[in-house]
Amino acid sequence: TILMTLSILYFKDFEALRGHIKAHRSTLFLSSQTSTVIPFQFLKDYLCPNNEDFIVGHLSGLPSEIELLKNNQLKISGGVTWQETLGYCRSLGRDLMTWPTEESANVLAGLATSATGERSFAFGSLRNQVDQIIYLNYQGEQVKLDSKKTLLKYPLFENLQNELINYQEKFIPYLKMKNGPIPRLMVETDLMIGTEGQLGVIQEAIFNTIPLKETKFIMIPLTKWEI
Image 1 (tube, rainbow, N blue to C red):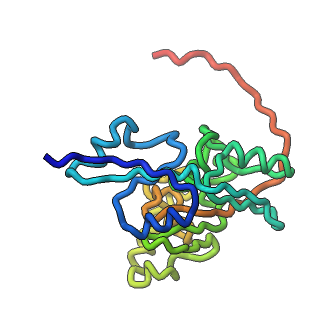
Image 2: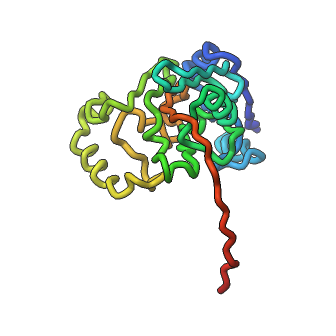
Image 3: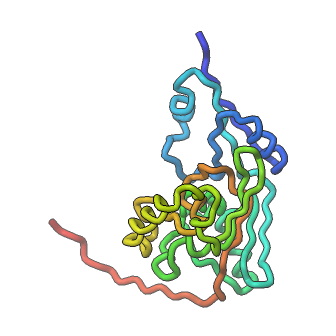
């Protein structure tokens, strides 16, 4: 009888992560474990169905770096949470344009799931707030994605121009949505945001910020809905 094994690896630096990626072993990468489509207590049953060894790679232990750049953009790397990011921004008089419900989640994991939050109704989708993304591809190499560069000039779509234009036209009705039913594929950063990290692991991202302003909320109690 062949026994299935599920190993859990905690990455403490990017060199170790790059080395693991280059080994091409079956791995599910996760960070803060605030949400998943697979219940964590059943990971072994779902990830090892064919008597194959499988690895869960934890990214929350990677070195955390957060920096406000001179142009008031925010650079984030590693296991930084939304709560840490908000606190850092506000201490410098800046604010994020997105407030995900679970602030203990990691910011870079939030990019992979497009965790925009309710502020998207005022400031637009998370896709519009991220300027650059650097991720590690299947060879452990750094790849830079730029929100100012169209996907029509991206090498991946060199021989798929008509197909991409067709896809973009079909996405137009969903442009103003927080999260459309299909991924947006307009600019380079769209390849990572909301696509669950299928191309690789996000190492760094640069966000746009806004000046910090006092916010007031007004609650209006409504009667219960009745059938």
